[in-house]
Amino acid sequence: MNRRTTRRQFLQAGAAAAAAFTILKRPGLAHGYPANAALRIGCVGVAGRGADNLGALLHEDVVALCDVDAAALEGAVKQHPELAKAAQFRDFRKMVDAGGLDAVAVSTPDHVHAPAAAYALRAGLHVYCEKPLCHEIHEVRTLTELARAKKRVTQMGTQIHAEPNYRRVVEVVKSGAIGDVTEAHVWVGNDYCGGERPGDEPPVPATLDWDLWLGPAPARPYHPKYAPFWWRGWWDFGTGSLGDMACHHMDLSFWALDLTHPVSVECEGPPVHAESTPAWLIAKYVMKRKDGTTLPLTWYHGGKRPPHFADGRVSKWDGNGTLFVGTKGFLVSDYSRYVLAPEKEFAGFKPPAPSIPDSIGHHKEWTEACKGNGTPLCRFDYSGPLTEAVLLGGVAYRAGKKVAWDPVKLTTGDAAADAWLKREYRAGWKL
Image (cartoon, rainbow, N blue to C red; front, side, top):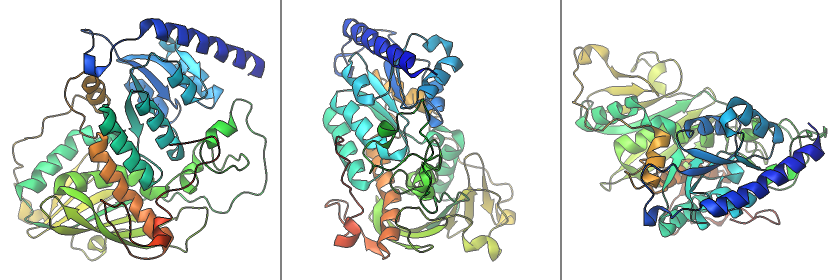
């Protein structure tokens, strides 16, 4: 792709977008939307998860596309020709500053979630943001409080929350079918781990703005070991398998067991690496529940699993999952199925009548709520505390010690551990 042509195209698109947005501005949620009007959405990140989110938002009016890679923008339009007239940007700040948007969807690597979402919220826009909500706990709390103060509609990208199976599991657990739940276990096979920092410096792809990709993270040379996918295994950009997957899988425990926040967490794993996330981890949480009681919840990744399978207490289970241990039995679930054990004791089990309404769709929950219709179940008031709990596991692992958690003061009470709650942004970036 010719860089000069690309730059000219972006400048033209940006100018056209600014003019169009200025003309077409509408009142926001506080003033009501015109009947049957579509939301005007800007998408930040349009490849990978961003491509999925973009496709799921086309029932509204996607009027702006933003990505640090021109090839991703070209690919989005090629896949969805109806977006040919959408304005294109490389920098989300310029997209928001152009005006005229109602909402923004953020689908960047983890380290850019917070600055992009905060910039949109401060501009008065509704925000959808991929999981984990942020890279650091300080960022999570900032976004949660900012969304509340701005009275904007939010949703974190935990798409499985909208699927029927999670609803049925919540109903079964809350019905008391397995008795009082005394502990929970959550595991995935993923083992994102960056390894050692590469020593070579291959050229930056002609279509990629590497400086914008780095965003608030410390500067380093480009390498395909970071972008477009493996950033997940590097602390500067991602949060490892725990951050990448626990917001999906621990979500089920949060919902079914009415969890609020960790009391403490301690970890087992390989020696801490300064730059790379661990290939395996066992994070032992003590979680507070809404009724004031506590409950142990253990996270595993990288081939580690609960001992209940090896010792025969629960039958073999392939793949990722969640195990609820009750006084009357066990329930094992993943995204789409669940089983009760021991199987002979639950033969002929009849689940309770459904009480949680089916979702209209994870993305549509958000877009409809932006118009004043309903409330998204994964709004930041819910997904913020979930993400804080997930990220605290990474804090404990990196600190190399058991940490307590004060969710009001936002501290572990330990200065060395608290150092991992917040980091300084690179010059030119702010939350």
